[in-house]
Length: 225
Image 1 (cartoon, rainbow, N blue to C red):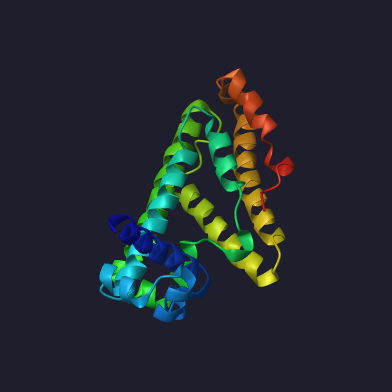
Image 2: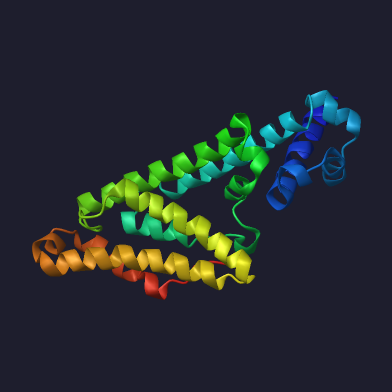
């Protein structure tokens, strides 16, 4: 019985996550949730006080999954350039949009502090990971020290979310791909300019990291669909 109850709760959360991603808060009705999850109405109100609590649980789970994925993407001993490039070009459902980012367009969610919190926390985790990685790249000589890490991190986050919006508007992944490639090229160009004006900075970069950076040339690395 306990296993069945745990399973029904998980199915409710999983179904709500899918509906939120595609329909937002208003479109995620209790009836739609029950149909999506295949769970009876009694189970919904056994586990949750109502729709708001279920949506919050679904958001928190989605946010936790994404935050864990972000942290894993920026972990390890790879070069800073590779961490950023790999994250930006990872596999995504571009035309569906970001499962967490899309919620920022939902007036009910952004108007409710509880519902907005998981979204804000997820973006903060991404910003922190990007900022730290950019600083690592500056210390190693991969990324220009003329760039301000927290501002570049914000620009990268904005490029990802803006790329989703442009792709959905065009019903094509190409605007997203161009945006991602463009932000990588800007970072590379800034570093290349610094190396031209200060060759000693380039000489300070470990040879292995220089080879890695060249192998991940953004202009030749097409973002994943």
